[in-house]
Length: 123
Length: 123
DNA sequence: GGAATGCATCGACGTCTGTCGATGTCTCTC
DNA sequence: GAGAGACATCGACAGACGTCGATGCATTCC
Image 1 (cartoon, helix red, strand yellow):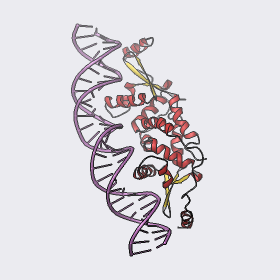
Image 2 (cartoon, rainbow over the protein chains, first blue to last red):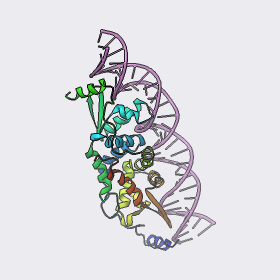
Image 3 (tube, rainbow over the protein chains, first blue to last red):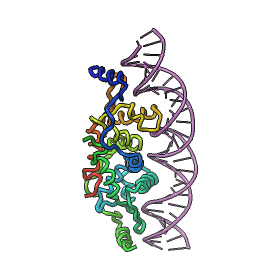
Image 4 (cartoon, chains in turn orange, purple, yellow, cyan):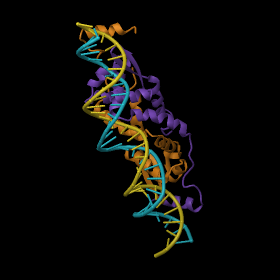
């Protein structure tokens, strides 16, 4: 343990055990605002749903096609789409019998911004 | 509903209700690989933890300081750090009495890559 | 109008999650 | 070696989550 002596020194002097936080960390409000977006995306099925929609022509897809892409019940897919829609990640539009979901680039950009800025990635 | 006739037409002809998926969507394996990372980050506390660590000097921080940043039990913070560590987002190093957690840039980059590539954002 | 189709909603279920208090383990001090 | 401090682990609990079958609601076709 080559660095033990450093810890001993700082402890003996009564100082903080480590250097104070520098840079600007995320605020609590910011974290509570972005976390729901990540939570909505933090599921393999929903991740693929968004990916499938984004990869479709016009960045939109109808539910019937999305259903066929999974070995899950239609009710389950509908549930996942609702979660993504409620989180603001997808737009919903009904056309006749079919319902189309489209990605909201702004919402995805908000998440992407998380990892682009210095708030998460070290300088 | 100006686009209803289109739907009717395609339905009457027995075609798919919408254009086939274009571009390249995420694979199931890819989704199941990235989802755990997002799930680990999809919590306000863990998001702030990573942010605090990333914003610290050397992109690392000791648990004692992290504990002070939250109004939560030490056991709860320890739990969240374990989740982040198990997901591969944080490195753990013990130095004397204290434990330091550091961000793993590669793991964060993997998540960032999700939103940079065309797999999620429309072209 | 009746039947059929696409999608949402409901109710139920097992499982996972976030939080806590209590306890254990390790390291250092004296 | 006894004590103190830093952190992890355990057990427990309420709440959220993913999935399903069944049902309901529009819309379209005949």
